[in-house]
Picture 1 (cartoon, rainbow, N blue to C red):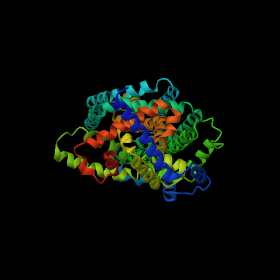
Picture 2: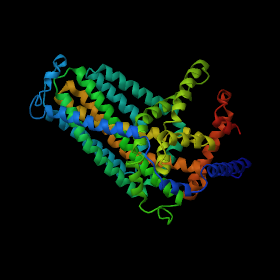
Picture 3: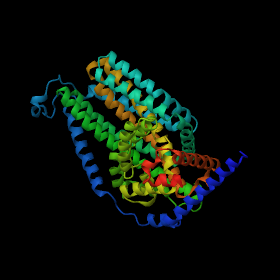
Length: 495
């Protein structure tokens, strides 16, 4: 630590902080801009708000009709006469399958609440276990699918297990820094109990919607439609549940990230400069002027993030295969272009500045590029680790419901298990998003002004700065960087 190299690194850390602070001053001046924005919020992405509400009302009506048609009496609403060409299965009753979805909702809620209750003491251990056990669990489910004769799903889960294993191997060297960031994020949200109550409230709201959703899904499973007709309806309902769950999760993301940003910006939750009723204001903005932006971003962000993680993991392990590297780089840059307009850091900008989703995503990405923090964000795998926890919770939920279905109706195992898995993922995701919100806010604050992080946790600031320094050195030393000389991040790295 007393070597000249260490002294040089320390000066580099100071230089990074100074450069980032100067860039922030050029962009936003002082904190008064945040206050000004709070007083002049405008509605954004209203079209997508309308689409989401229309979809919610229309699908809610359809779910109620399909569930009621088989509730206590077959063909109560006489709908079967409209589907004579696709009616092949023996009809059942909605209440026959509805309890299985009730069990799935209960297990998902239990897992989500357990995660939040253990957040302060065992969160890191839980995340480590999830990272290493998920591939094994997927492989076990694959074997069970083959054993029950579900060849397609057995292959699908086997491929998922292989991809999970390969991804963990490709990012194994990043996990120590990732766990450090997650520990600090947990520390932040654990000291803000009010944001935990927000997550509990939204979980209750999701359960209310899932009661109606599972009622309709049970009606579809009980219908006399052919297997193909039932699957098509369940796929449509699952996409709707995914979008609805993502909207609610990202609404919590906006509320929590807004609170975390204020705490870091003002130097603590007890600071006299924090606006009064800041939590209620964040909640108000998230459910009114910014809700359209949340609905819009929730459609695309998750899929683009997952694709980006997989491509980054593959790209780092290709080696010297120039042909394969060229193909992967082409896809990588297409995804990177999408990331500029669809990324999770947009939700912090929405919470703080009240901008539209695309403008918020672009501003956040340009902020990272102009300060070099994009190198640190790309190195961090906290989002992937939290997604693994969400998937693991969903798999446990789906397995429990699937086992019960297999005991009673072996031909409905996959149908009930897969939809129950999605329910579990949404419920567990509402618990995970609290930590992810803190992570995104920490990175935005570090890019805006590193001294905000230094004031909050000096040791963490030093570790972030050291990692950023190493990542910029690594990028500048890469022999292939000439291919990306137009990228401003590489230019910053070389400088």
